[in-house]
Image (tube, rainbow, N blue to C red; front, side, top):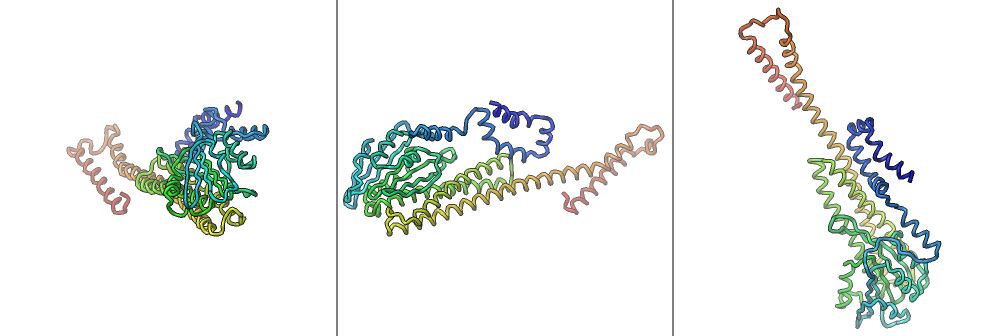
Length: 401
């Protein structure tokens, strides 16, 4: 409780002190950035959200030697879909007990089981027992905070990845997907129902392409390629937004501009953090020479690895562009401030001699020259206007106006 009070005092009370308010007025953009970056910490302190919750839950489940779902529940009920296929036929079913029909010794058919809703720990555990999955693998499947990885076992390989797409509100939606690839089966786990693999299902139903003519390792390539397409789609959306931000930064930079820049920088950072282990996992698959990856399929995984490298390079380029926009934003603000100060200085300089003349003739001495002069008022006005015109002409000649 004391730490929360200290955080509240540091982030809320201290900035309102007079000396800090003066400092903020001198450096408004620096304060804005600092406030934006500490927004998550402030919100957590005020609302009482414990961001170490998932870590504590993971530790508790390990201590109790039991499985626990770690993440956000995105479906009310789990759903299951099983494809049993070969090059001649394909059957499809969707009951929650279909996993029992997977025969690892079946040399005639391949199996693709897709599960939506990994929050159903009991279902995942039963499936793990049926396929003789290691308890560590089951634990990683139901833990959405795991880093993407690839692990090779005697009877299967385990692969996990993050899928990133923008939702309707332009927020990044991150979903963990896990895959278990065996000799004649592939199990895919999704947090929610999505359209990542709809086109692959249609190809399988209509026998289009090579998906039914190849083994399950080719199907895994197809699924991973679909996920990687989501990254490119997200980066394309961010790059489009960066182009709009660039126009605003160059023409009319505002405080909302820097907030948009920082938001997109955070989004790109999340993409980079997900792509890097994805690339590492693909590299491990290619280098480990796993027996579940047939030689004809390796070229597809090499191409997938190259595409992942391209995505990482594009993410780095986008982040560099956002860093440049940050520098341009502050440079534009400085230029804007310089222009404003130049105009104010010019106006003040013009009025200095005029104020001097007005001050001289505003003194209330009884014996002053020109006080009795018939045309004195108009003469003074003429002199002041002449000075004004001469100074304006001089400033224009020097390109100060």
